[in-house]
Image 1: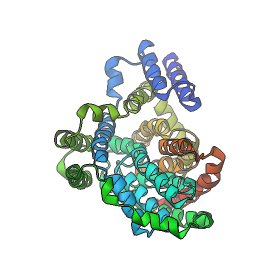
Image 2 (image 1 turned 180 degrees about the vertical axis):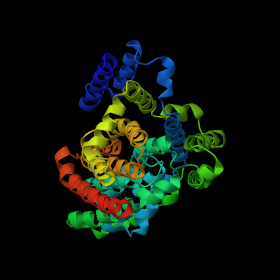
Image 3 (image 1 turned 60 degrees about the vertical axis):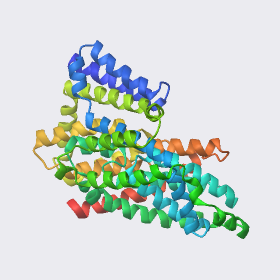
Image 4 (image 1 turned 90 degrees about the vertical axis):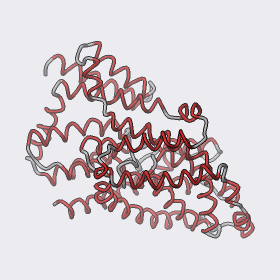
Length: 423
């Protein structure tokens, strides 16, 4: 390897180690890595910017702003209380309905936002029922990752893959949506068997749930109506973005601006609520991976993978699926996906092979792999933190016993699906 290649690899490995060990904040780690690449003259400022996927950044910023306005209407609290009442206050029914709600919301919002909204309501309802919220929260963690797998905007890895490949919202629903739905059904059956004995409550507790007034959760009726209209329009726009000739980021940012203009909310407060550290993390990450691409390391790795599998697409697809799942269980899936995207693109250019099955293998493995451990995805960390703060600790060991087997089941389902679809 050349000197520049060695330096780019060292910077990449140091950055990833800092992220994994959490000794340095992940945003600081990626920005520091990006600066090192510029200081060592591996990248220029202009080159660095060219490696930043602005479509991914735009979707994330747009959806964060959009949700920050919409949540002020009280719509999510309304949905939670209404759902509990539809379930007649019965814990088993509430669990199933909340799993489905979490999965559906995560398909169209980012899953961190979804668990931030659904988690506190779950704790409030389980307190009324006088049962532990932990089984409910664990199921919601997994549902959020499964739901996020199904669409283009549900999980950051999908946003990144869609942006790099110009795959549409419909493409994701048709290819990742099917195994995600099957995995969700399997998860519900698994959870019912696992947690049925924890679902016994007093009749008086159920009566208290039925007395709750969901209408009191609505903070701003006018904003709620606007939010519902805009959510429908955004979903339709994402589905038909190719026909509309619009990038996903354009739709997300347009929706955000409309809600900021007509939502009647404090713009300063909404803008501050955006997770800017996450946005900066992505920018730094794209540049650090860009250093590997610029020096030719990505091309070397692609050629090695092609040689190892003799260009066998099915074998490569299965390796990427399982490697993505196992690695994403223990490491943040975003850096992993950011590294593999240019690798797969280079494989296509170098080998002239159809890499479409590899994109779906990467998406399914990275997104569903997040269910394996408590640190596998951001939603896992966020919701377990909410649970801990409310006096209901979720330990790594307790989650692992439930999450890892379910992750393996979901990847087996995906393996069967991909083999039937592409083998």
